[in-house]
Picture 1 (cartoon, helix red, strand yellow):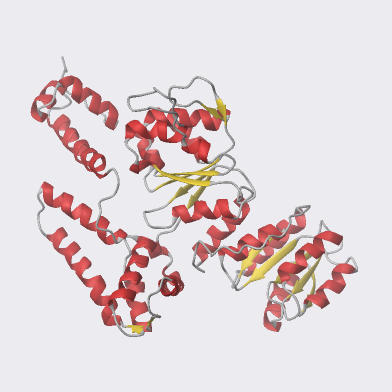
Picture 2 (cartoon, rainbow, N blue to C red):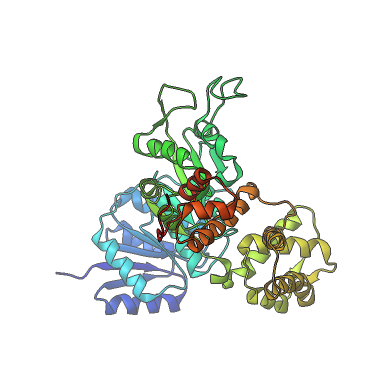
Length: 479
């Protein structure tokens, strides 16, 4: 059987040589060209079983070649290479119908693996090209971000439910917006809901709407977020904070594609793509009885983990330039960061991730004079929060001091002076869990004694044990 012929196009002769040798050793017949015109002559003549082309060519964009190739040879797979490693590159490659996108520099083993898959998979996709004029929602050229871009590119033309996991400040909503803005629902509405910011008793009404008289104060019909997002995307942020009753309603939507308003009886069909996000361990919440396992599997169709900033330090320079450019567009003076300042930023641990970096750059752009932001200025801004954190760890804290420390870390990470929404319930729950656990352990599971120690009614204690999903070690009888 004759070896498959692969057509390689890149204006860099060194890259052509390396790719030629790697694919040749893998057993393929390779032909190389340095221009789009040279490549096109082979394609028009019906030669080649696979095309691997750079995007930036001397005479034509590799992206512009793809629709022309698809018109005359729709089954010829095209793999795109590019040093412009942005989300827009990955999205454009997917929209034009490329089989795969390879960011430069790439591993030669990966190149061979992609070639093998392309030659084994018939490609019949024919997609129209649409220019993406929106600003890039995600920044970074690190390997971790390249993988995120490729996953997003594959998901934009589907309606699969996506679960985005990552620490606070990693950009979960930006990913959700990219899935919407570059996907087939781009002409619909993107609606974002933060579960942690809504009082628990209002979550169902907020999501599904309500009828007049459904509850006290419901003087008219209320439109829910599902209705607002009809035909578009509904982003459910902090899904781990959704109450169990609302989880049951959401599960019905995912299973049956319909819901009822609060106080309503007629099922309403819905056409909404669900994207959820969390910074919590949902498996742990399932074990505590706080999150439905069946809902978890319905939401976790495509899991997408966003790396924290400390795992992609090489992206900091690009992010800094982006945030400085944005600050300039908002009317602040033009600023740059010197190399020593960047090195200090690379050594920082970034507990607040990209959001913390953005807020720091904004402060530096506003507060420090001069065109170049110095290493001393960066060190000064980072020193005080670090010193406060060290002092907090070294000294015993009262309960009120622990609360102040918790809020102080939040302010530092988010660059805000207002507490997070729902902070009361969060702190109360975090205090209740260890407090009740310690008392139950001390009384060997005797709920009557534990209730006495806590100053609670026994029925109240039982209810809290169920709500918190606590396990009771029954060393003594409770009756």
